[in-house]
Image 1 (tube, rainbow, N blue to C red):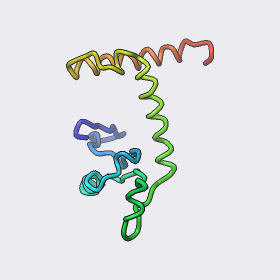
Image 2 (cartoon, helix red, strand yellow):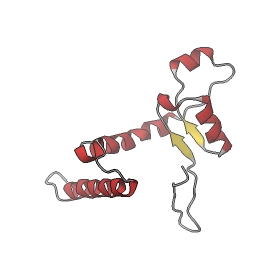
Image 3 (tube, rainbow, N blue to C red):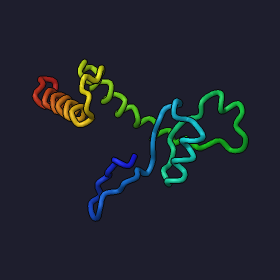
Image 4 (cartoon, helix red, strand yellow):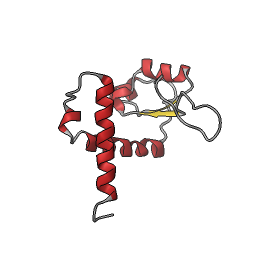
Length: 117
């Protein structure tokens, strides 16, 4: 999370997002407490085993924000169609990031110069 930079129209970039969306796999008290300490809104649904034994008011889930998470999931899924990214052939993180950027450029160029657009 410390590597996140959210640009703003003026001033320096924000280092923390306003909200973090995750699936039920991220629904742990430790993660929710960390997000609360850093003033980040959690958009994470409760797991079924947590709902049964949860005391008090359950955390509110912003359903529209959670549905927007689908865009990111589709982007990651299409990137993983590249075998080099899915199996992570690159040992160094810098080289892996470069491969991801090339794959994103390839997707953008395919979209830009396709007959469907």
